[in-house]
Length: 220
Image 1 (cartoon, rainbow, N blue to C red):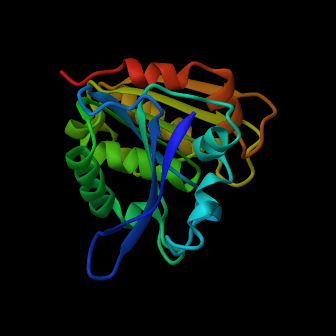
Image 2: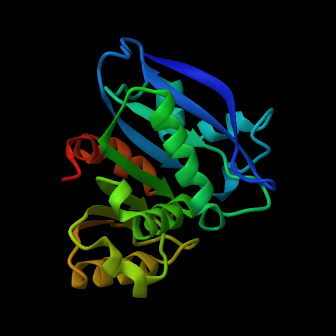
């Protein structure tokens, strides 16, 4: 059971205000330190951060929490990307929002991880490559990125997922990122779901131990 902090907003820049959910365990205690998972949604869940914020809960971690399919001993941040943007355009804004959450909640800053699906998979790779010191682990699902930069993930735990029947984001996007990240010294696991189309997030989140794995990773 989670306590849901609805319709929080963050003025990330003069042009952008991010709406977001924060999920807290029902035994949340400010005297304890909790891991933080940052969850980035796909393109279909974008919105105005206000009356459209509930779209964040349509798929992925937000849906699992709402339907009580998953309960986690951690804090989960689910921001909403504005409709005219993609996550890769908001990397610094998301970074600043994470810092705000770290200041406002009882976060163990050595256990801050990022995961996301589709557009959020791209955003997860990009956040990890841009701010590797911030994250203890990265779990991109059916995403991709600028593979030539993947060496920035040297030493970082990465667990990537993709369906081999995905006709929205080609599996070659993940393959290239995984190859370059491994070559650059990242500790990469890669699961390919046979016969699975674009929705590889359900088997990734529900049928593997990726969430427990994220919580187990620690910087330093």
